Image (tube, rainbow, N blue to C red; front, side):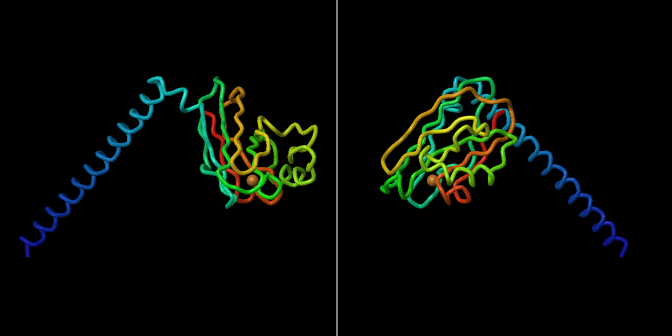
Length: 171
Ligand code: CU
């Protein structure tokens, strides 16, 4: 009986030790990963980080739901419509909203801006937007990255924003 409890205590302590080690290893791995991330960012990869290519298709989908860029630099975004449908039926754009803009309010106002490529005229809710494009077309925009923070991007073609939106993160 004594032997059993000793054995149990021993096993217990082994479990604690190995568990602790596992956590430590994970932490170290994470740290290394973060360091690698940082070093790729600083080793001349600025071009690719702030030079973003995103596609949209006939299935009403963007290829990304998150765009991350560096603050204090220019951002270039290329939107490519890889579908076949005309912009009148499956038009796409990419609109980045200011932090205080309301997504649903904006998307609702956009639906009536038919003659302005679904960008409400005189709106002050937009940081940057591409033009409206159809299948096979593309558009590239360049603008100054806004202050660090998380913004929303969407396609403002009527009925698209629910499926076509994502986070534009400036860090
Ligand atoms: Cu769209």
